Length: 372
Image 1 (cartoon, helix red, strand yellow):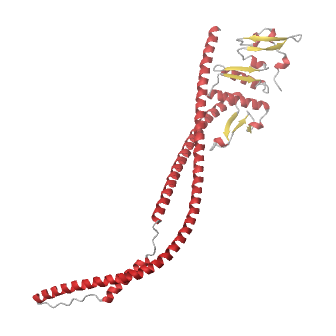
Image 2 (cartoon, helix red, strand yellow; image 1 turned 135 degrees about the horizontal axis):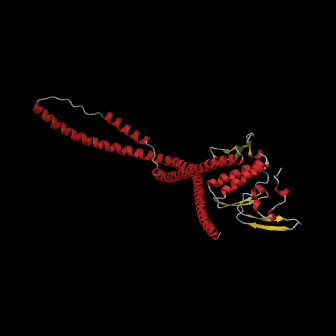
Image 3 (cartoon, helix red, strand yellow; image 1 turned 180 degrees about the vertical axis):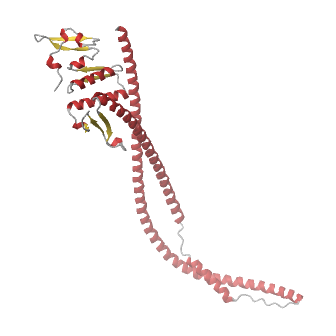
C-alpha cells in the first residue's frame, strides 16, 4: 500500500505538472488572442478615425475651394477690368510703337533689299539672265500683324498663382491617398489574420467534435446496450455561431433530442458524454454524485462497470446508494445506520465484493432497491 501510495503520489504530481503546463499554455493562448483582438480593434478604430478625418478634410477642402473660387472669380473680374483698361492703353501705345518699329524695320529691310537687289541684278546682268522677283506687299504684311495681335489678345489674363495652388492641393491629396492606402493594407492584413485564426479555430473544434462524437457513440451504445446517439452542431458551416445538440435513440425506442428524454435516459446520455470527453482528453479526477439515481438495475450495472473500467486511467469518487454500484467499488467510505438507529462510519479500502463485508456494511434494503 505504501508503494501504491507513492506511485499514486508520483502520478498526481506528474498530472498536476501537466495540468499546470496546459493551464499556462491556455493562458498564453488567451493572452495572445486578447492581444490580437485588441490590435484588431485598435486598427479598426484607426481606420474609422482616418476615414472620419478624411471626410472632414474633404468637407473643409470643398468649403475652402468654394470660397477660394468666389474670391478668385472676384479677383479675376477686377483684374480683367483693370487689365482691360491697361491693355487698351498699352494696345494703342504698342500698336503705334509696333507700327513705327515695323516701318523702321521695313525701311531698313527695303534698303538692304534694294542693295541686295542691285547686287543680284548686277550678277544677273553678268550672267545674262532676266528674272522677276516680286516682294510681298504692304497689305500682306499688315494682315500678318493683325493676326498676331488677335492671337495675343485671345490668350486673356493669366493667373500666376494657379501653379502654386495646384501643387499645394496635389501634395495634400497625395498624402491623404498614401495614408488611405496604408490603412486599407493594414485592414486587409487584419482581416486575413482574423480569417486564418477563425479557420484554425474551426479546424481544431471540428477535430475535437469528430473525436468526441465517435467516443460518444461508442459510450452510449455500451451503456444503453445497443442504443444509438450522436452529437449535432446547430450550424456546421459556422460552428461558433450555434450550439451543440444531442440526439439519442434508446434501445428499441425512437430518436429523440436530449430535452425529450426521461430522467434516467438523460442521466445515461450525460454519463456517455462525460466518458466520451474522458477518452479524448482524460482528467486525473472525477466526482460523480448519485448519477445512477434514476437508472434501473441493468443500466446502473452498466454505468458501474464503465466507471470501474475508466478508473484504471483516472480517479473516480462516486456518491451512490445503489448496491450494484458498491459491488464494483475499490474503496468504500460512508455512513450506515445499524439496528437501534445508531449511525456508523464505514471505511473499507480495497473491497472487491460487498458480500464479503461484515454485517455493519449492510445498508437498509429499501435504500438498496432500484429506483422506480
